[in-house]
Picture 1: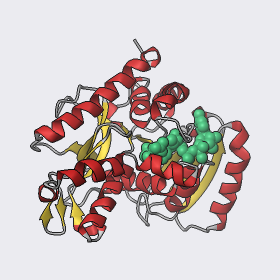
Picture 2 (picture 1 turned 120 degrees about the horizontal axis):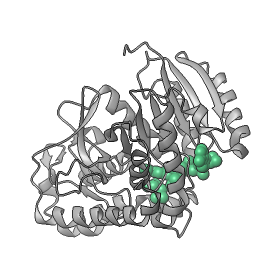
Picture 3 (picture 1 turned 90 degrees about the vertical axis):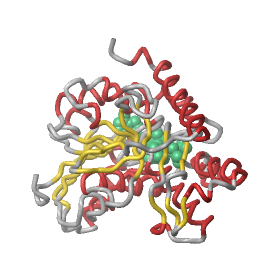
Length: 330
Ligand code: NAD
Ligand code: LMR
């Protein structure tokens, strides 16, 4: 597809806080490139359609050169018709004191239904990123309900965790984010996730070198990254929004336009059964995007320290899938 063919982008939860932050950057070309025209399709619950209409008015007022249209729906079948990109943000967010597991049952049904509808009406080259929590398991549920769409087109967002890990490393090393590469986030988008720096490059140093300070790694770096979502909820009284929107845009941008040649990023994809992750679990891996497809970085040595942490997060993912078993097709 030429870069000047309009892209059809459906955003669910468009009137929510992440949707509001994402839409303007998509319209401005941050996601698909400044030369790619975009048609936005916003899906909301009926009671939030009026708010989405207000957002559409503001999008209009942005006079974005590449924004061809904004349409608003409260019906998933209409909203996903012909979608090439589905940003599945719409879901109930976590409030103070809740863990992601509390959201499992509340949100899982949404993704079963949306998977079915995407299967019926989306474009043949559909790409999906699930942001609504619990994102990994919601993506697995949607993929399971879309038997005609290749499962690897269903991804979940762990780019926010990846970006958070880079930011914390930059603070530690006193360098800029651009001086850091090859960070990996493994597992679930939850406090069990494992941000892995053993293969990272940090301003000319190896991440393994930084990791020799085990007290910092175990008591500071890993929990700060893994519990950042909770810290933000405590501080703002609402879950992260602009950073989540930015990471969602980074995810699709790199998926379509490619990762830097000497770097990789992190994304949650259905496991093909590598690195000890059972096939089908939507797990975060270090990934490169080549020719518009995610490829899991192969051949990384996983030491004992990393193995235990990856296994713990994968066990949590397996438990989530068991918990929503009644929503998976037999
Ligand atoms: P929000 O409450 O501000 O907005 C959610 C919007 O989704 C609301 O406007 C609601 O009406 C809409 N919605 C709910 N169900 C819907 C459905 N079935 N179809 C269409 N729209 C629907 O929430 P938010 O802060 O924008 O967060 C959205 C989701 O993203 C939450 O689940 C949150 O936990 C999650 N999140 C994920 C990450 C990540 O890194 N994966 C980061 C931050 C937040
Ligand atoms: C985040 O990581 O900021 C979000 O997933 C919100 C949350 O529930 O932690």
